[in-house]
Image (cartoon, rainbow, N blue to C red; front, side):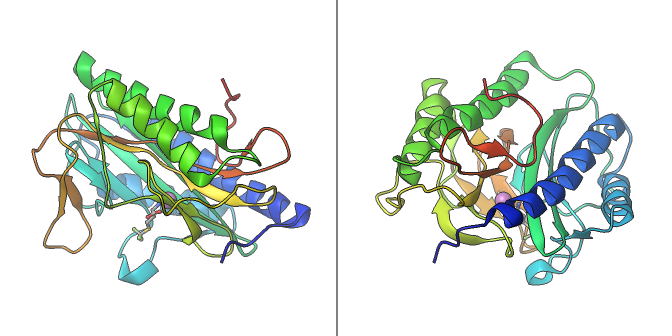
Length: 252
Ligand code: MF3
Ligand code: CO
C-alpha cells in the first residue's frame, strides 16, 4: 500500500533529509587515503545523533552499523570495518536517518585520491541516471517511466543495471511501497501522485550486472569484480517538479 504524505509530513521529511544530506557532505570531507570505513561510520553516527536523529540502518533487520559503506566492487550494504581506503578506490556511503518519525535515505559514491578516468565516468553517469529518471517523477507518469529512463541512460554507456535491488517508497518506514526498479518491470505500473515519497537509487556496474552476496549476509558484490556506483535521493512527488529531500542541487 502506497502512503500519501501530508504537507506537514513532507516538512518532517525535509528535516530528516537535511540531516542525511549534511552527513553525506561531512563524509565527503573526511574521505581520504588511509581512513578506515569504521572511522567514517563513527563520524556519520556521531553527526546523525548530534542532530537528534537516529541512524535508521542500525539494527534494521539486524544490520550492525549506522551506515552502509561499499568500496569498489561492493554494490551496496558493505559493513564498515578495518578496511583502509586506498588511492584509486571508490566508496559508496548510504545514509539513512530518522527524525520526528520520518526517514531520509540517500547515497553518494566518492572517489578516493586519483581514480581511473573510466571509473570517474561511471560515477558521473550513475548520478546522471538519477536525474534522467526523476524527469518522470511527476503525476501522470508511472513508476516504470522512471525505471526506463534510468536503464536507458546506463545501458547507452554500456553499463549494467543491477536487478536484485531497487529503490522504494520511504516515509515512516525505510522500505514502503512502491518498489522503484532501475530497469523496466511491468510490475512498476503504479501511477505517481502528489504526496508520494520515494527513494530513487540507480545501482550501476561498469561490467556485467550480475551480483552475489558475501557470507556475512549483507555485502553485495559484482560477480566480475568490476566497480559499481550508487546515487540515491529521497524525493517527494508534487503537482509539478519533485522536491529533492536529501539534495540541495537544482534539477538540471
Ligand atoms: N538505503 C539502503 C536500502 O534502501 C539502506 C539499507 S539499511 C540496511 O536498502 F540496514 F539494511 F543496510
Ligand atoms: Co534506499
